[in-house]
Image (cartoon, rainbow, N blue to C red):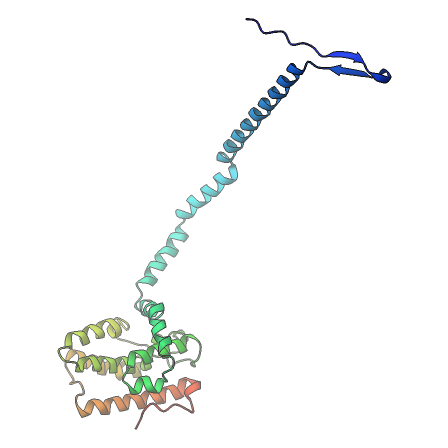
Length: 259
């Protein structure tokens, strides 16, 4: 059945001589619905065009190209190689281990203990961590190795490190059936730290470092019995003298259980 032709609006004279447009109510409703449908269609087309424009946006493509170039950039790759080398550095590994939040929390738990107490109780490694944090925080003068970074206790203050590490090595060595543990400690915390056998100070190389090396290779007997007590007292005195020289905070007040 053919649809009824759309009735055209009529023009009539209104009150006062004004012309009015009279529209069939049925067709007027259809016009409104058709206008809404057309508007929705145009909005959908606009949204689709916007999505396509974003997909081909030259700014986005340029960012993608820049990222791809960065991934293949030899400078970036070189920085990655340098970071990998740093991760294999024994000094960096030692510092990362000592900067471990768990270890630092343990240090905070012991903060109420003085350095004198730690060393007097033969807690050599805890004393070293306390001193390491002080050096890192700038509480020490430049050490005897002039080329070493001033905030790196292992490079700037090797004598202090080895005095404490040497006593820790001897402490482990004196434990029953602990020779293998002492050797493991030596390799990991002394030899691996100074791989070339040199600390940057000939005084340390021919002194405390050589003593530890001789104990480990068996060319010199480790102190035992009363001799071990004497050796610990001598170490405390040496640490005391060292701190007075390089740590201003301890210059006039520290006395590390010398009696």
